[in-house]
Length: 352
Image (cartoon, rainbow, N blue to C red):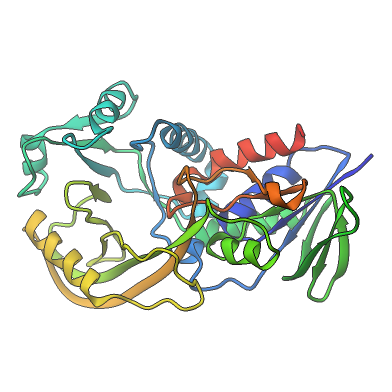
């Protein structure tokens, strides 16, 4: 009996999952991918695309390590993603819970160097607390999540048993315990045994619209600014002691940002917070005095979906009565973990 699966949403997470399912070479699986027009506010288009192996949380770290290893071993994936090796500096605040354990784990990772205060000062950092340590990865870098998802969708569409659909107009159950009817714009209804909502920041609203509980899912705004700079540009970095993060962009430009505290936002009604840009530029001048910020070129505001685990994973929608899953809690970091998380999610779906 043929299993029919539909992945709704074609950000990086949804595109990677559909691509994995279609590439499983299973003769008894049909895969549909429902594609909306790319929204400039979705996390895949707006993401800075930082990719590294290190994460503080062990579960995230495992997915990040596996994703980077696959990327580095596959020239085609690197080409699709526009991957650039640029290094990574992740500065830990060992006075915070979990950071000492993460530092110990980093020392055991291959291809990683742990840097102390003297090393960081030589790299241009100033004003860090004495208990700050950095995890440095020369093979890390950044990619274009939008370019990667576009390539994955193109490859998916050419595979046997794979079908691209238009935007979803409705989801309904044909009968209790029966298949799902997926209505799409321009393609008519299709019956599916399994539906996966990879709809990013739009997931909580979609679930609420169908009367399904969403207490464990919410949204959060993401914001960074492209700043023209002079002087010494650092590798892509995260500074947990201040919240500042950034990466080099085109010549003479840096992406600079700090975390927002804007929870529960409507992804269709996002607004830039000038104060966040002011803070990011001020912190960059303090922490990296050899980096000289200039004109602020463009501020990017997007939103992502956050779950209890704050990471990309397949989760059942219990209130839907079976056959319905989310794959959307990327929490702003799907670029680092999408390859491994999609492989695991495809494995789980195909194994029932």
